[in-house]
Length: 242
Image (tube, rainbow, N blue to C red; front, side, top):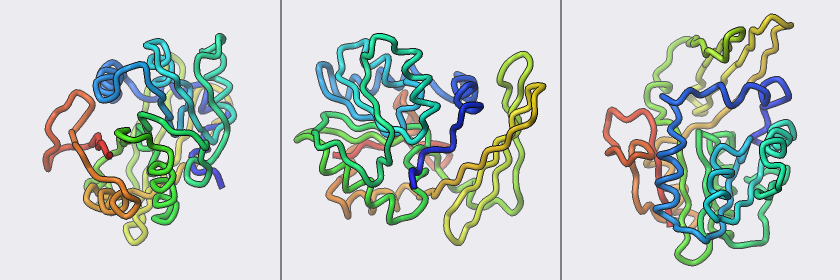
């Protein structure tokens, strides 16, 4: 099973509109990654998607490689990268390595939680350790799960995708297994399409323990890519492991 493969053609087509700038600060993301690992360097991104992070890094002189479970997302990446500056392949980043070493390994926007069991998360972290070059860094960006862990009933939010399209997101949680089930429904005048996305969330200290079990050590943690302090009120965290 490929963990990060919920994005078919319909979702891939609107993926870049799913997360507005208020939720994703690409400029800050690139700034921090380039600070942590100056170019030239080799970068591996898990869940590379349509290249939101990979393409700006490649433009700055990085050798960027990516793994993603969605053929539709990689098709969009190729459309945005006609010169082939980024190398990417379809695969499962929790079970397959590249046989290469990288100065920076990155997994952003909750993609790490797409490994839906503790065992798959451990497998992913072991592969990170194997592929991380000496003095390399592993950067993870995920949500802080406390607010979701306390959900008593499904929650519904609406995303604006454009002038003629919205997305309905329904989230429910199984606290006993730390599973979050998201259901995305696109309403754009056509036949509604529903996609389910399952994630296994981990609390920050738990993530640190999983990483330590695989030979990785927490170096730094911030509340976002602009280096805001991580506090009890933080909704997300950016964690750097070495």
